[in-house]
Length: 196
Image 1 (tube, rainbow, N blue to C red):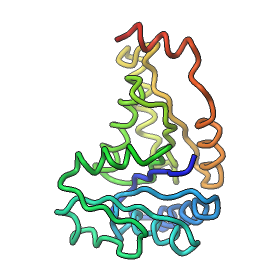
Image 2: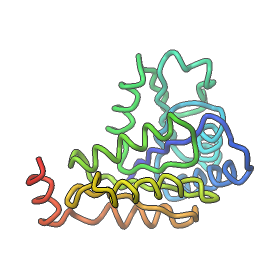
Image 3: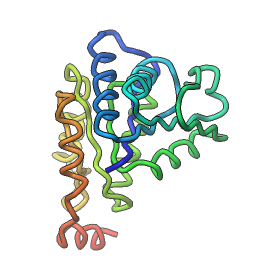
Image 4: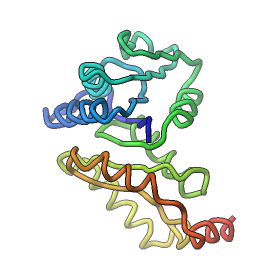
């Protein structure tokens, strides 16, 4: 695992603990020699995690659509900045460059990017680990909703979601690393093929 994509808010949120977690995660990525792939902005949690990676000597790849360059103050210090024409291209490029995904707190855009990766994983399009960093219980309502979907029969056996959850920043990289090294079981592969 060499590149981790982080989805997070372009604002810092109401509680300083969100930015503290983003900063700590950024430092840990750099210290582990893992590159950050993210949305390219220098504001909110996006800016906090990128500045922390850079401050600890790590590598940052920012991918941003042209129309957001000014709104999200593209981070000029990143080693690699990619300006793309639209959100679809941004998301695809972030996916292609990542070995794993982490969702910090964020808004609708963060949720949309996270759910897209969950969907692609559910449909067998990738096996890259997906982790929710549940800072101050931020993602608990989503986990409850996913459990509700499962209980109501909308997430069927064999098409279950595979994602990790932790509320501790220090557990993020060990959990991702463990999931990254686990090959799919024959049963998992067979169930995906059977459903589609």
